[in-house]
Amino acid sequence: MNEFKLIDRYFNWACYHSVSLGVGDDCAVIDATLHTQTVTSVDTLIEGVHFPKNTSAADIAYKALAVNLSDLAAMGATPKYFTLALTLPELNEAWLSEFSEALKQLSGEYKLDLIGGDTTKGALSITINIIGEVEVGRALLRSGAEVDDFIYVSNVIGDAAYAWQQIEQGDRPSDFCLERFNRPTPRVTLAQELVGVANACIDLSDGLQQDLSHILKRSKVGANINIDAIPLSDEVSSYINTTQDWCIALAGGDDYELCFTVPEARINALKMIEKNLGMTLTKIGVITTNQSLDIKGLDKTCTSYQHF
Image 1 (cartoon, rainbow, N blue to C red):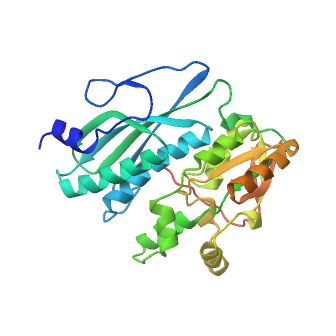
Image 2: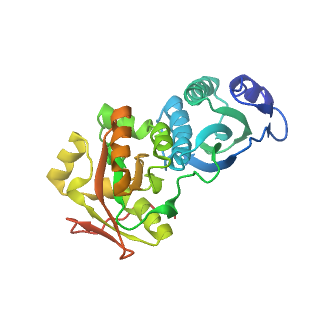
């Protein structure tokens, strides 16, 4: 099987949106829409860095697309299209079938069209470029936080980092934590509801401490957060109570939950979103003028993930 037959067999399926030309040519051609802005992001996942060597093809496909969807979620955007660059050490049709089916299933949940990409031979890595749209001037930005905004985090954090730590130590994570690591849920629906309610937003990929700091830097503000307010699962809470290792939640990364700021005047609207979605949104602190991040209750230095 050559490259072109591989693409046609595993990565050429019907589109949900208006695509003039998709998989099969030098470029894709998509129809522009009025009154919207294009939002795009790209992420690469590499074996041994972002997922262990024995990770299933289905889990790799899911996470590769989910983390890109999470970037769109952070902007309050609607997912539309994506491209896939797939580097494989060998042509394994069983692996490709499993990868393709999982990718197709998740993309179908968000009506997301695969419109092109590339395949090559080498160490296993997956690069996805995702494209979405948002109404003009309505994107959620890191630069919108204002003094006295309350800081919120969706659901719980720390589970994925705890799973990765256990894997590196040769231990078997719980099914819950492993699922949170391999198959994070992109908070697309929540983010779209936050448009017009939140002032600033970011998805938590590299850890709460580092990612919140991006909001502070872009907004030119500071923050006070209370470590005891950080939302944790029972499993991570038990681990922290035993070890006092708060860095697993503050700097571990791979949560793909949302961290966002909301002014007091819109708290009732936020509570309505929380109720309608059946989702826990936890207030962890407040935006300040001091242009630094103060974590009350933390007595050690945590180092968030660094790519280099």
